[in-house]
Image (cartoon, rainbow, N blue to C red; front, side, top):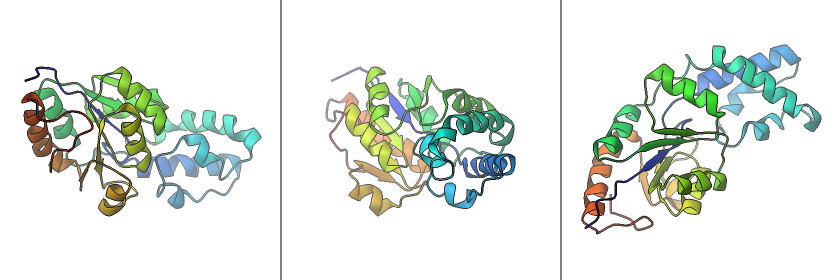
Length: 219
């Protein structure tokens, strides 16, 4: 038997929130201010990697830092209100707390912007860590003693692996169920509406000493 609570990390974009409309608007604002063509519709099909990676598709290397500053300047008034919570997000976070665990947000998004999103939507997180991508996320997840990491991107699976955490993938981002399974996710859910039931079973098994991080409970 173990009484240690389960701590769960969540990605933000396309896991907890649908940030596409707001991010699209930010890139259109950058395009208008700089006179640079940006295909904002294409941008929002590949959310996940760091901002600098995407900006490099549209601006030369010596302008990336300035574009990051401009993007972050327009983001709060352009993107926050435009991003709704994805279905099941609040319930998923609440399920972790109801089981006595901590619900964390570990995201590639700029930390202050991530906090603005959560505050705007009334979603409470026990900790928010931003500006991390893929394996970098694993460092923060490990530091917080995270047992499960939930995300929508292949980079999130890599982050969970780096932390030695169970990878739970949701097919609400750029990848479908089969792609996420093929990439090595331990558990794949169509969206977060199924997370509370899955987590209830998983946490019960964990409490009974049946399941440990890195082992898969059939879903």
